[in-house]
Length: 98
Image 1: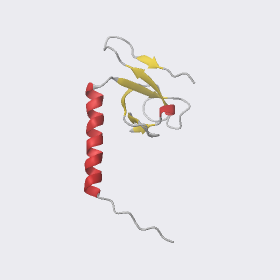
Image 2: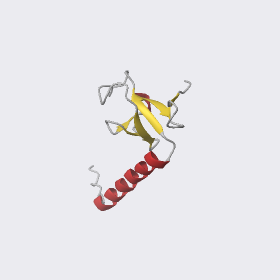
Image 3: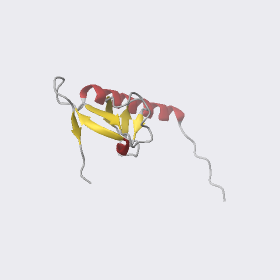
Image 4: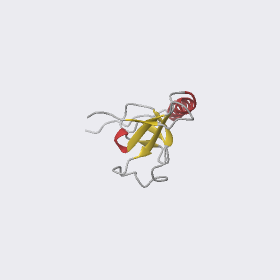
């Protein structure tokens, strides 16, 4: 038994992607400022400058919900998170208890 092919409305998909990207841009500029760095244990560790913090947005609960940085999107387990409270204060690392 074959399953029928699904029709995708490409115009609607483009509009949804544009809206998502616009939301991420807005959050990067006006939301709680978050930074990340790629963990040495991550398979993405070679991307970008080693140890450098980059701005991110937590865009979804999905597996690759961290948006930003040299690779564009990451899993939470691939990055260390930092919160920025003021420009003249070092970012504070966010840690989670297991």
